Amino acid sequence: MIMHVGLCRGLGIALLLMVTGSLWAGDLLMVRSQLVFSDAQPRLEEEINALGYFTSSARRVDIDLVSAGFSRGTYRSIAYGKPDEIKELSAHYPELTPFLPPQIVIFGERNESLLVALSPLYLAEIFPQPELADIFERWHKDLQRILENIRDAR
Image 1 (spheres, one colour):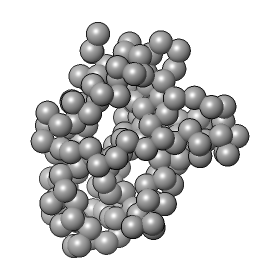
Image 2 (cartoon, one colour; image 1 turned 90 degrees about the vertical axis):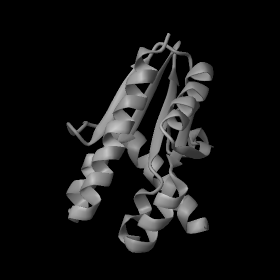
Image 3 (cartoon, rainbow, N blue to C red; image 1 turned 180 degrees about the vertical axis):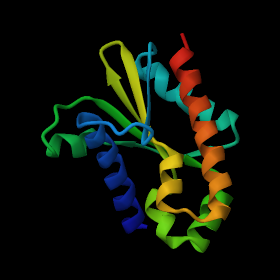
């Protein structure tokens, strides 16, 4: 359990550091929303649930960011997934475990929110097993829909 939390924390920080550096096209999905953070986070959780996923945690990551030299702000890492699917994937593909459950990082920025997530299609490049391709494609389409709905929310 402790190792899993550490891996999730590491993924969240890695996503944040990727945002501050150069972005590789297709590796990250990112949208800006006109919703303030306090409205964007619950709306994000609603959109995740509407597609049949569950949020497993909403972790504050600003404490880790401050220790990494960033100024204190409003950040959350939202882990989500379908519990049975995540358990099955972890059991059959333990090398996939550091990427599970998928996460969306949400930043409060002025009077807007920025949402960033690792593209599930990127996972298909790392894990090219044919039986995973459909899962990653579905996750990608669902993630795009979630992010687009947050982007378009008023």
